[in-house]
Image (cartoon, rainbow, N blue to C red; front, side):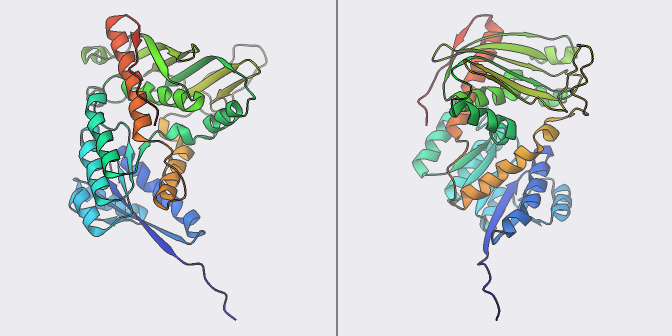
Length: 352
């Protein structure tokens, strides 16, 4: 007697933009297909980009459908969720398009080019009852998740110090940096987000310093290649957030959380980009990561897996646009402090 089969539900995602990040997302969605198939879910992908020939090639590589006509073409075709991986300046328009279509939206950070430009988008999402997940992938990294679990469980005790760092092995192109908004907004915003997420507290003041001893062109566009921010939380706890474009040892992202009971460190493993100067200490002995894509490979997949679950109505939004804008407020304050040389209070909005 034939066994009953599990009902199949189709979930169609539409991806707008297949540049570096978009290609990564397309491959990660394709990698998720088998796991969702085991749950009786037929996960499909359609994608679009103004560079049609390139987009067709990506679609063929990952088993997706190419749809011409940009986001309107995807929406007209019919999608259950919209993934936005285009340039920052296009995010507001595309978020609105997804919200207007009544489908959940995943959008790479930031919501818009500035906090001021983001606020009307937040209001629009709320007014229309939209669902928008912003891409802060560190929230899905195993190390950060364990640090949060440990803190929430009381195992760390009360936190007295936090030290977050992000070190790129080499800088992006000058063309990218010229439009990135600066080191704090482009890079450290991830650290600011994860500190709010882990502690459940707001950063209320930032004091920043920076230097530029690498490519002079970085200074010529008004940016720095290395920076440090001292952050103060609303309960008086202090922390530091450092970043550099020139961490020659390898891509290095870590967070040290020190508490009254214990201390933990995220990112300390065989691939950590450092070496001990103590005698007879060989750790870490592995090859270091070269890029953020390698360091957070599993987190990026988990992030999109969470978005599919959001589309299915199986979970709450793991990273709201309000959260993303809150991290951007801190980045803005850090940039202002860097430029003025004075501590800057953060304009804190009510938590969503």
